[in-house]
Length: 292
Image (cartoon, rainbow, N blue to C red; front, side, top):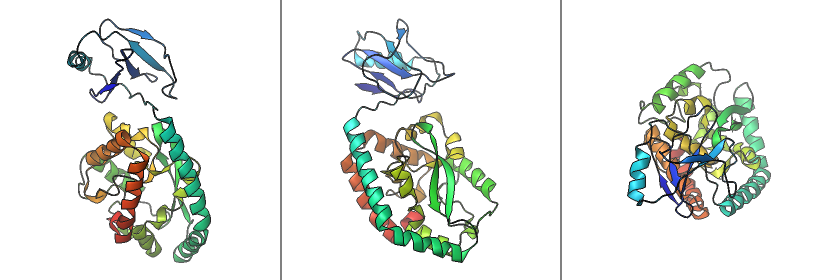
């Protein structure tokens, strides 16, 4: 199968049966080439998304001719069709995620309890910080962290403005994950962030199947809403506790660079790559680089 990326709307050419596959969601206008016709999806289910169609058309010319034809389509991006083509990898990864998260929650329960007590003694407010994030295929979920900031600090709008600027290409050299209002971080919170212990409650998200140990970091909803259409490709995988961005100097990356790393991970994901990222995460956490 050959994938042709075009204005943020990849088109798939399957040489065996020669159709081009596009994803058509509600209120999205499809793009097609002259001489092809619409038909319902056939064969195995390729995606759980609704309103998906297959554009059928025999490919009688060379691939480069087909590429030229695809690039001449009307300039209207179409949401990407997510092909879940590797069920064995997906199931194996999910089984490992579930088992490791369960073991981690049990073994780390004394640590989790100690952190909870420290947070309560340090500052008033809840122990857990819950925030809506955008997960796989844009599905929203509640992401959990240990609270590291003063409760009701009132700087949410500052974070929104900072995030929009970062996504739009400003604030390079600062990470989207740690906005510049560090004055609201508590004493215990600074330690938790430096050691990444504030992320431990996300083991519960992993256990529930909302996250994975490795994958693109889950961004806040308004951060993804400011992203370009092609950047939403990072939503094709379960968000992760760590990822390629976290072991690649995330604090110096632009948003575009971060997304390209996420897309690279999605296109090359494997258990071996997951293991390498997990191993590289250890020295990053120990050195405190994850907070810079």
